Each structure stands twice: as structure tokens, then as C-alpha cells.
Image (cartoon, rainbow, N blue to C red; front, top):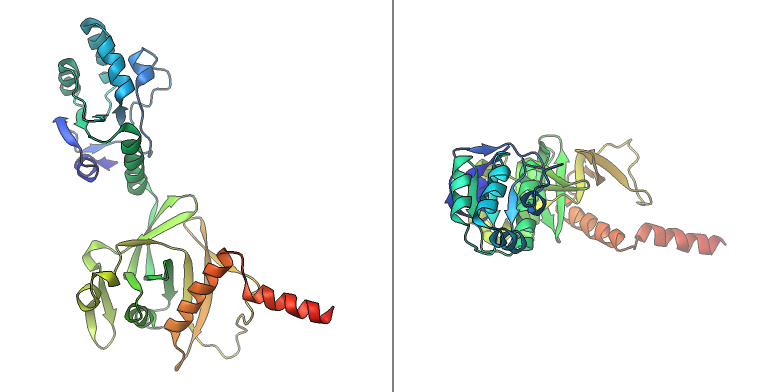
Length: 302
């Protein structure tokens, strides 16, 4: 379901004819340009999508006689479309206004060209309809990379994030991260509005990162590019010391690279997270220090 007023506000639309519908039963991030419907072809008509009228469709309607145009529009609105958006700031005909009101379809207008509006509207719908989940962790932008810091309560996630902010990086969310999957392989994380820009530090309480460090220290949302999982150092556990293999975890069916980082007193976790982010960026560009070392060893042995 899509909230009608939120859709109108987010896309800066002008209401030409209102609708009594508070929500639209829309389940796909798609829009329809009803050129085929205006010529009478209704097979496979996605009438539950927002209908977008551009210069081509409007020019065709204007070429029709009044009686024919009214009959075509009557057949179109009879399908109970949720809304019609007219692009380029064009004015609808009086019969379009009348029939939209008759069938309770919102008639809206934008001054954007059709292709630009369609891109913006699909992006908005995609965000609204994306699968969502709530995770426990801290999301930070480190060198332009979204790093989700996870781990048991009290392991030091917030303290590490605070040090990263102090070193010039940006906080997205602390403790609670709302995640949505906007594409098949891309996750976006953000903080719930109630606790946005706030952080809990044990022994101090709640602090406002935006107030303390300025607007440049926070972000509203960020892609989740990698996960740093903090855990107390276990003496008998064999931790990866070379990094020849990459580990992944799955969030909402999306595979995300993960690094398990052991924590113990005296270890600067924030610096290690910075290094992990830089190292992952290098791997994305095709360079791996571990593989380079492996090549050197192989050449010496050969």
C-alpha cells in the first residue's frame, strides 16, 4: 500500500482533482503510460499502477473529437485507476477533470518532463515497497563505505563508532538499524526517526552526535557494503591472519562481506575498522595484499 499524500508530497505534485482514497493498493514499483489504452487496447492493462500522461499521450487525446475523447477517457477511468499524473505542466481537458472526479481517481500534475518524473516516481515506489527488516548494530560511513558493526551487547560497538566519528567519519544509526532491500543485491540502512543522530554510551547516557560534532558527522541513510562483527577475544580460536578467503553473511537474501574482529583491551578497534574498509575497497578494485604475498611466496619457492 502507498500513502497517497506521502506520494504527492515526496514527488512535489500539484493536485488538480482530489481523491477520497487515503492509500493506493499498489504493490509494484511500476508506472504505466496509457497510450495503448487511449486507442482502445485494454488487454494486460495494469490499471492498479499510477498512470503517467506525457506529451505523446496528451497530443493524441487533443487530436480526437470531443465525443471520441470523452468515450476513450470514460472507458479508461472506469478501470478505477489510483491516479493519473500529467507531466510537463500540461493542463487536462475539462472532460478529463470531470471523469477523474466521477471515478474518484486523483488527477495530479508535475512540471518535470515525463522520463525524469518516471525515474523519480519509480525510485520512490521502490523505496516504499522494498522488503524491510530491523537489525541490532551500528551503521557508519567509513571512507564512503557503509560499515555495519555488529556484536553482542556491551562488546563496544557504540564506542568504536564514536571514535570513528571523532576521526571524521559519519554516523548513520546506533543500536537499531532499519534495513530495506532496494534491489536484488543492495541494502540501505537508516536510523528510526525517533533515535536519529543519537547514540548511547554506557556510563554517560544518550548523546546527540549532530549537536556535538556538527551536521557533517551524520548521514540519514547509507548502503550496507560490509559487516564488521565484534566479539571478545578467544585465546583458543584460530582467527584469519592472511585474508586469502572472503567470508559472507546473508541479510534479506543479500550476501554481504563480513569480517570477524576479535576485541580485547588495548586494541584500537576504530583504526582496525578503518583498515578493513580501505582493504575491502582495494579488493573491489582488484588488489589483494594477501594474494600479492601468496604470489611472492610462490615465486620464491618456484
